[in-house]
Length: 250
Image (cartoon, rainbow, N blue to C red; front, side, top):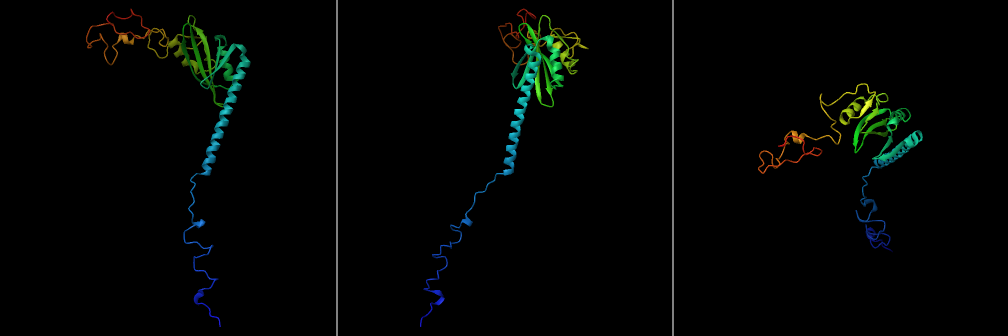
């Protein structure tokens, strides 16, 4: 008679719990289901949005450069060798002679869509000329243009742009009083900012900067000025002031 071991002892078909069983692992050890995974905090939607925005910006930049190139080509084709076109700080600059000034402004407005007048001013360009510069803008394409011309200092006359851009009115008045450029046929070419009786054109480079001579300069005293000891000497004159200008004890 063959006896059966109690509770499965010495039974080769019975394996104690957790021992020798390749399919059973101790709690929490080597169980791939219990292996901590690295959390990815990146937002796929945000990454896709940033990529799309970058691509859109690149496309808009390329489109703007293409549009600006087309503007340059059209100006060159229309004016030929009467215009000099250059690029500076991302802006296209077109230079023409005074005789083509109004034609250039009109072409920019009517043919190129630069209907927005931004500003106009002058630049003292030694030794013998003034530059008159106008900045205009195309609100649809975002294209900007700097339009320039040169007038001689001995005869600083230029046709007014008020008939093309009404906004040029006050700008031309300011340029007239600050630089002395005369805009022919301007409807009301009188001083805009300076007080009555003011003489000279303050933004010309040969205008005497006399404030340091006529009035004591605030701040520390120079040798020779009141309260700064001795010996006294003539203080340094500002740039552009002749040596014999002002009171003898200045």
